[in-house]
Amino acid sequence: MPFTEGNLVRTLSLLTCLIMCVGSSWAYGQDDGVSAGDPTDDRIRRLLEERQKREGALAKQPTTLNGGETVNPVFLESIRDNSMGIRFEERDAYFRMLELAWQTPLSKQEEFAQNFAEARRQSDPQYARRKPTEFPVVVDLFQHPDDYRGRPVSIRGVMRALTKIDPGKNNREIGEAYEGWVFTDDSQGNPVVVVFLSKPEGLKVGGDLTEEVRLTGYFMKMYGYQSQEKARKAPLIMAGAVEWRKGPVPWRAQPLGAEVYLGITMIVFLLGFVWWQGNRREMTSALHQRDVTFSQFPPIESHYEAPVGSHATEPQDS
Image (cartoon, rainbow, N blue to C red; front, side, top):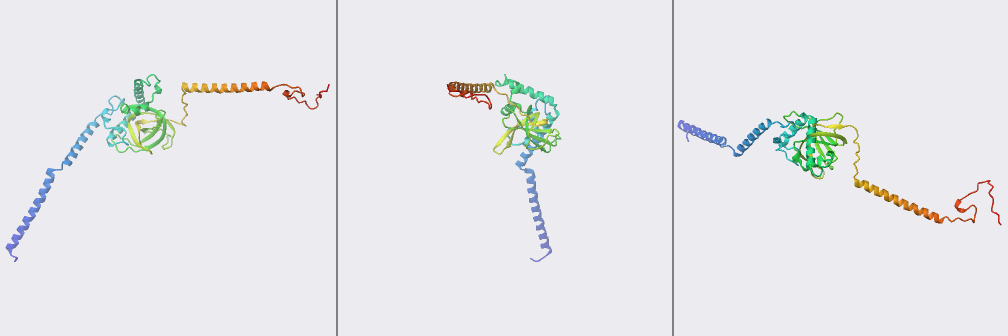
């Protein structure tokens, strides 16, 4: 085609139309994406908004409604027993309980714990007639965690491991904390996991301890953990501090039952009877064998020996 002014104008017009069409198509596609939107994104956006509203409403709720006797039930709804570690949904309750245990006076926590344990003992026919000190709180806690959740619990035992932990970012201004594994007389070889904020001076961090401690804190949940054999669970208690008894753990003699004392008495009686019978037979046998003979002098049974230089004489024949 010969290059003329008319051809140049037509060519420029075609290029202009082509550019406008491509630009319009690109703009149209972009508008469709914005206007139509992705249904999945909308759903996620709504869930995030609902979650933020719920968290905002919970943030205004107090941790306790009765001066520390129990944790506000709204913070216990997200807690799940036997779950491994601390779930994300449980972190708010985790830090709130730690803060509550730190702020509530220990004497009040101990009073609440004692009153509730006594009520539990009275409701159990097996222990209602026994002494309060005989009620196995840890055993009852294992069997009925829902009844104890969010309530103070007092325990006493031997701490076998203590670790310093970083609880992570939180809005309760809680920095470092400690995690201890405590074994009680009634835990039947199962640990109680306690997280607390204040460590007694001199109590060492380590994994081979035998330190006697006493503590009161809020029960959170049955804490799932992995042992060498299988997944296990332990009560998780949030405390402000622990009381430490310095020195070696004393050996506590367990009281013996009436059956044990009766058995020991019978054994002693039987051993005495057997000894008496044996001694009696020996005495009777010795008496029968002692037949005195005068064929020699002195008599055989006296084992007499004349002293050297004595005036003892030999018997004369008659």
